[in-house]
Length: 207
Image (cartoon, rainbow, N blue to C red; front, side):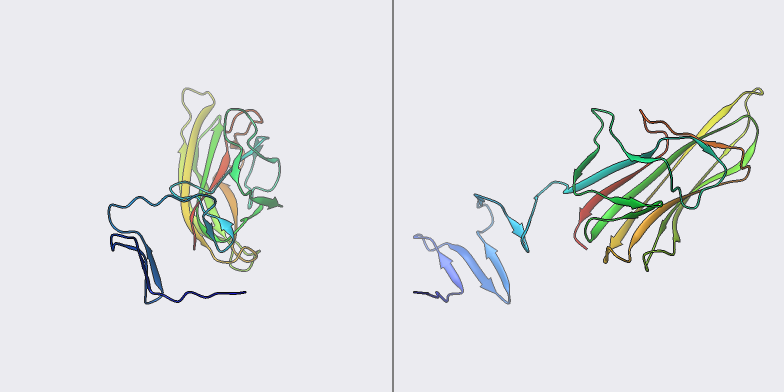
């Protein structure tokens, strides 16, 4: 037998509202109350983590290279040097330098790179690029640095760029990373044991 209880308000024995519905908004408890959730709180069938991130993923370039790259498409790996975080929650996927998000949402994307050169380079540029059709990259964020040789020795520099993206469609909204240098002999640093050039993806919330 199926029973249906139709009410707008549920109160405790003291007459205080426990649950109230008005204009399609459900209010549980009142100011000063403590709400205890036993079990898993879900959002449309998916577990909802309150007050915490649900996804973070870190990648790096493993082999140094000279010249430009648009996008950086080879020698990529997820960080795996303990105790550094490899990933938490869902994971990004990568193909030919194009990164696909595991779900829709608001994401912070970070890109950092180190460079070295025994000479002068007026610019070493980083770009975060996004797509609206799954393939064509649009420059979304840019950072620039330069190298002025110090005492005729190899000189190092680094750059960092970040952007917050609204991923509404995981088939069309993807991301990739570009480096562009004034002198293509400048080396982009990389390492398999520590991250010299890499990418971070952090899901901040729903779109």
